[in-house]
Image (cartoon, rainbow, N blue to C red; front, side):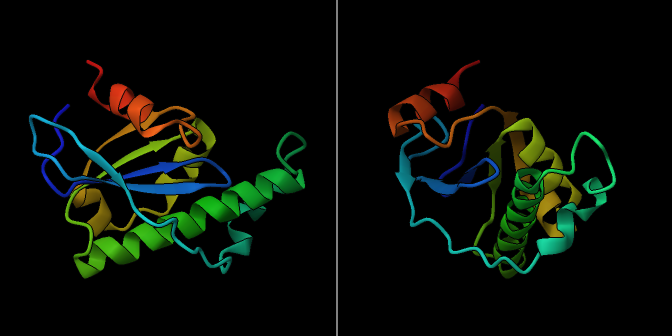
Length: 134
């Protein structure tokens, strides 16, 4: 996959959102890490649909869903404002599922792709390898 200059890459799990930007060009991915966004926990109810399930009612799942919802809101705000022109998302399966539930149509239009995986703790060098792998 190629990532045009300025592409924002969001790497997420249920607790962490890392924001990277391609400072290189399409042929040469060069990742720069930006400051971790401060997410507001105003989406506390996003995971409540899991509460009635006997398999998904634990507090950690609710926190993860709430975090993913807040992350989606943060990404939506930045795509709508034009701060993010192109976006690629790397996330764990549960987080990606919750993120998708909250994508705004503007985010969807600017989304270059998604990759499922746990990569929030990876070094920039390893993330680079993951992102350029065929």
